[in-house]
Amino acid sequence: MADDTNTGETGSPVRYDLVVIGGGPAGYGAALYAGAAGMSVALVERDRLGGTCLHRGCIPAKELLETAAVWRTVGEAAEFGVNVEPPELDFAVSQGRKQRIVDGLETGVKGLLRRRKVTTYEGTGRLCADRSVEVDAGDSGTQTLQGDHVLLAAGSVPITLPGFDRDSTLVMTSDEVLALDEVPSRVAVIGGGAIGCEFASMLADLGAEVTVLEYAPQIIPGVDADIAKALARAFSKRGITVLTGCRVTGHTPDGGGTTVQYEIAPRSGNGDIVDASVEVDAVVVSVGRRPYPDHLGLDGTGVKLDERGFVVADELCRTTMAGVYAIGDLINTPQLAHVGFAEAIVATRDMLGEDPAPVDYANVPWAIYCHPEVAFAGLTEAAAREAGYEVVTSKHRFTGNSRAMIVNDTEGLVKIVAEREADGSAGRVLGVHMMGPWVTEQLGQGYLAVNWEATVSEVAALVQPHPTLSELFGETMLSLTGRGLHG
Image 1 (cartoon, rainbow, N blue to C red):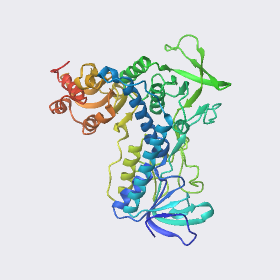
Image 2: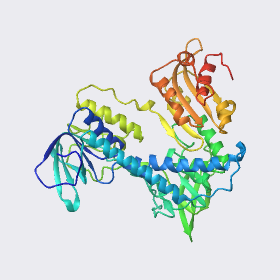
Image 3: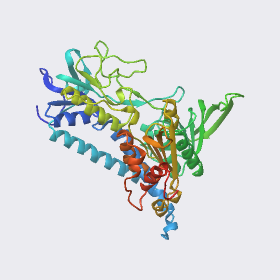
Image 4: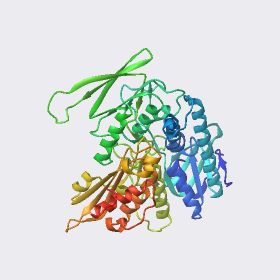
């Protein structure tokens, strides 16, 4: 077969070492890795290569967040002695730039697949018996592919709420927010997880009055409580209202806007539930994503789904059907593009008989691109204690960091969670949690410390460059030795 796109010509089955269904990061990552290993690979995609991450998720969201960052920087330029005319926002220009970046990256993915001699098929792939895949290309006909192995990577779609049917203008999910023509004046963001906080931050920077409604006790569940509290305070300073422990009950459209109703239970568990509402011009529903096996034709195959619709897979991403694997958002693991890449490598290496180590999901890196940014890896203080560890912690704030002062971005902190040794000293690094300027780019050394099971003394002995934002990580480690320099 040619190493370019195939629109699905009717004919006898074509055999490959691997047939991948789904062209998002997990799917195309597996195709590229398998191609590099010399396997013959077919990749089936029903929409556009790059999946949600490239077209309706990570990449377009971060481009719009960067627009917000530029807008914020221009607004603060006078503090640097740079006087500018009152800036104006042309959101259509930003959307155009976003699309150019997305299109360029999609072209890049196509080029990589061609160079790895991966054959791509445009159409809907359905799993059949004996690891065959039927590709329905609509008017172009069907094609049957036969794989020694089949990998399912169909991804996920946004979860919606009852009574909040999306209409692209009044009620939106992440898909619609990323295609906005203009910024609404007042917005309610339902869900204070990573995606919700990113959208809240972006919209607030661009002039919207934002209210975040989160059901859990804190925003960004999974991050250390100290970081979540600090982020809520930082949001409040920027005019973002953050309400946690609240349950949205409905909304009442009125003219061009709507009134969102919610109830808040007392934190102590005692007392009356308070009913409240907020009037907004738009609602962003950001309560997570569900797996999307809908078009895979799994009924009648040996592939099982769990009660939430995730494909059941073991630690090496093997499904309950021999020779069939599933990775990415289709299985119940962290819904992160880089986790999908890691699973792609594990699954492919298992196909090759290379005995790969499973992904350590408890210690994967998390990066949230709101302002201030949040990044973390490993256990929170509470989770470490629940796991039975005796712990010691240290926190240092960016307020006194010289580089943070220079870039005029001092909101945030670094918190290290370490195991307490028998003599009371800090031992193995269990978790690194950060909030502040560019912490998504700083997490690397913290991630390595956690995953290489480094001790505090080992990390503290390493030299940090000065003046940098990343030296605050070093200062926090050094303080855990009992002999810090600047705090």
